Amino acid sequence: MEASPTPPARNDYGQPIGAPVADWTERSRPGRTPMEGRLCRLEPLQADRHADALYERYSTAPDARDWTYLPYGPVATRSAFRELATSVQDADDPGFFVIDAGEGPVGVAAFMRINSEHGSIEVGHVHYSRALQGHPAGTEAMYLMMRRAFDELGYRRYEWKCHALNARSVSAARRLGFTYEGTFRQASVVKGRNRDTAWFSLLDHEWPGARARFEAWLSADNFDAAGKQRRRLQDC
Image 1 (cartoon, rainbow, N blue to C red):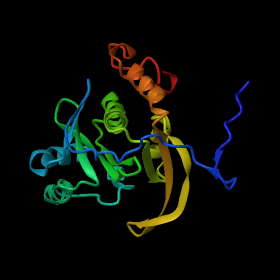
Image 2: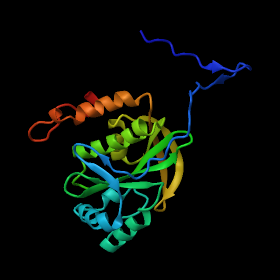
Image 3: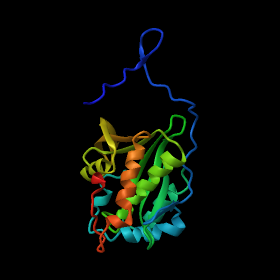
Image 4: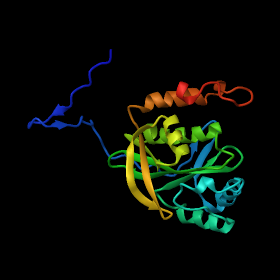
């Protein structure tokens, strides 16, 4: 039998009010220091070090479908990709990180919409090359970014937003443990087309359980000699 939910506190006027957040202070911004895992390393994007290798990785895709839901691209030439990387490399928000799974860059992701005053942060601009798609290092990269937000910096809310028609991103959010919160209709115009944006979140009190699942799934003994998972992340 489930316990009844705790009724909200009320002020002197009898109005329901939110739960107190004890000793809350503004959090630090995520910074640009590397994040290290067993399977991958995340480091700040630097065009002169990473752009050419990333371009080569993205160019292995047979078509441009991996660019469809990004707000930019597809980028067709090496020089154009280098210009794009240069234009974002020094930004604080979004702060881009390159994902290196042991043989050079294979994708990027960014911390963005950083609200340090209220402890909310989003992961976005997730762009995995075919070498990273479906690889456990891609999951570990998301775990490392969550760990920084929650464990290192003490944020309260971690967000994932995506085009509501981007089925792969919606599926990834659910697999990673995010909770769907709703869809903002006609949220923006991207590449001349309407975008409805699906919102997902993971909260600080949900993180310990999510972290335990990630760590159980990412452990070496969860994979056989061929690298195939023994248990799905959702089952850990």
